[in-house]
Length: 545
Image (cartoon, rainbow, N blue to C red; front, side, top):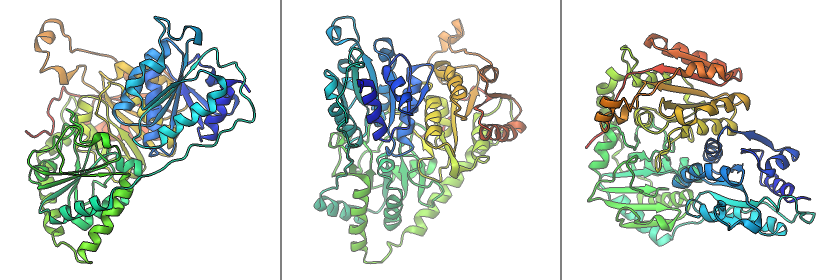
């Protein structure tokens, strides 16, 4: 068996049913021969974003895999791997490499060297006989501990070498770790003694699939819950204890409860300082429960720590809290939930003119609001893009089911959302998969809408087109005045049609809902859809000092 065929066989044993990539990489052809579907993209970054989503929306139960050419393919792919690293996503990256005799000769790009700072595990195959061992190490790392990318570089002269049969390979094991019982007891004591606790849930809850445990602990403590953007949908946002998600823009109730809390319990989170996450207020008792000890007190001082899988951590805390409660409620549920409901009503009333505006150009908030109330939330997966779409949609989109929102923001590459929606659709073909982006983002990855058409991936792409980089207007006034540097343009609905998809441009607020409904029907018929909404240059966001 040739080396490329051996790698394809190992991928198949690991449960990989499709391989995303861009040629030339011999693994792609070997995968097709092994009946693994090959999906070819227009640029490497989008393909990695697709693989990223496969892992995210399955909690890592399926691992997204991407293969690319040595040299320019590996160079082009760097941003996609860096994004997955920043947002802690487990993917397997399989670049080709220059022949071994020149792999370390300048200017040849060596992935095993250059990707070390954006991968969890990075290795070059040096002997074809070692392929099973190398792949075992890669899949063991990607399945265990903190989720992040792993990379295996295969020099092109290895692909045609023989690997002894039968291949000695069994799928890598997946393990979980639990926190120190004494630390659990101490954290339970602190939470029980808190007057105004807030739970902050990160995406570790998603990877642990610990949604029920999170809800049970919140109800036991009668504590309000917010999430990071990555953790959004880990807690049902129609639950009376939900404060919504935290990002650059937040709800009034989230701001109030976080500001006035006395204890903040972060579960499955890194507390990373970022412009696109909620800022933790000072002077609070901080509890951090995370899988990776490297995250402890990384950006903020913490008072208590738990290391382990979010599910096992929550289960241990639930048992301890139940024991301390003795079957009696804390008696705060009614007052806490009433206050949340009051603040939420005030906040929505403040924003309702924007959410229901009949003005033209369209309010982006009206588009988002109508979209929210048109789709079936329980069978929809949605993601934002960088910039205004993220800050406009994240506080108002009310998730009711786990893994129904792909949030991100540790690093913010424009155009990320398209690949995420496509990958989500590959993983969950029964769901409506949506990306919401702006006219800046589509300039980066819009060509891959053609990939959605060609590869039969019927997503719904919602484009907010204001012919401007509106979020940059305040920081580039002279560049805009003198050189129109923030102006951008295009008819993207026509672009979608030219690619063979369904495209529609909407300018009338009364047509928003009907256009969305038409788009949904087209996706159900198997056609990718791009709905282009002509919007105002909005720069107002739900932000608090």
